[in-house]
Length: 463
Ligand code: ARG
Image (cartoon, rainbow, N blue to C red):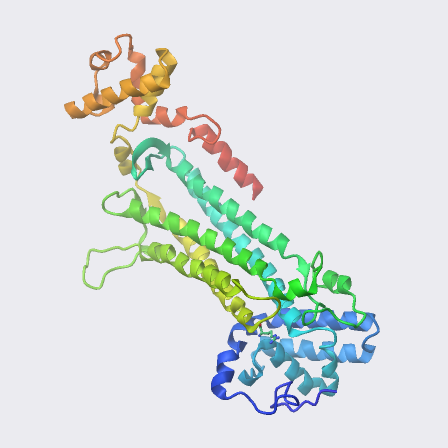
């Protein structure tokens, strides 16, 4: 049986000298992976229950180990646990403490398993609950977006392409574009969740084990659909880590894009969106300033989630099977991305509740830039039997004319318009009405008021 000298590493019989403090510090992951203590204990409990069921350990030893592990969990929870850096990681810390609490019988806990499968099991369990937490936060964000959209169905703003006025839209329609992004983010996380749903526990170091273990039993106990199929792949695989990092990256990229847009809309050049004092910051020198620092920070944070994804991809590139220490940093990257995203989701939700469109300025800007030109072209197609290309040309000439006259399209008289199309009647003037333009986009997914209302209702019902 393993000799347990509490100040020594588990492998001290084999390896005669200890790592120097410097080297230990370099290889140690305790401060990062101590977050996995609950999952580690749950995994160990399921493991020893299985060992007992399979008659590999006795009833008494199983109960002692579970008692010890439960005590350790309470100690950590109550901040009574003494983490020892020399023990490298959370797994060794818990095992060492188990020896202190229950004595030599703790030596049975690691029967038929390795830290390699133990770590991935813990990590997957942790990831499952993190995905649930993230999904709940995304749902809250969607809810706030829907609420803001519901208040702004007939708030008209210019829709942009190339950041130039393109066609009038409803501000609610624009907000509902965010909802689509967030819904896809949720699906992406759900896919990550479904893909990781295989239990690694029991593949041991890389080859499986000669003990008669029951991996279906631990799968069920730990809430996995099934055990993984190949022991070598299991300890080498970090695809689920990449999936999570990618899902996080895309979600933070969405937040970054939206943040950037709001920064632009809030800028003095646009003045289309106001931010309440609760979410702006001042300047140390310019007394007049109200800066959108939080939005800028949200925009910038995607930098670290991208970085974490690329770090993990690079760690895995060319890495032979199976376990290598290179993989240890997967947790650091994931925890950082998860914390960053959770923060961003919470902060963006606050921002959405403190953001007010300037309806007057939105309408005013929407009246600029010949924004109803496409409506006029469509009118020619529908009422004057022109092909769209002919109608486009005619409308472009009218825009040129208006520009020369320094007039907006809705300021042109019927007489002026008739110079281009003699058969035009008064009826044409309605195409220059912004509300009419917005409401005419009734094609599925378009910006008509009715479409938006239905879409908001549909998403609200799903909640
Ligand atoms: N702290 C290590 C990690 O997270 C534990 C796995 C150690 N396995 C090993 N064969 N050294 O990667």
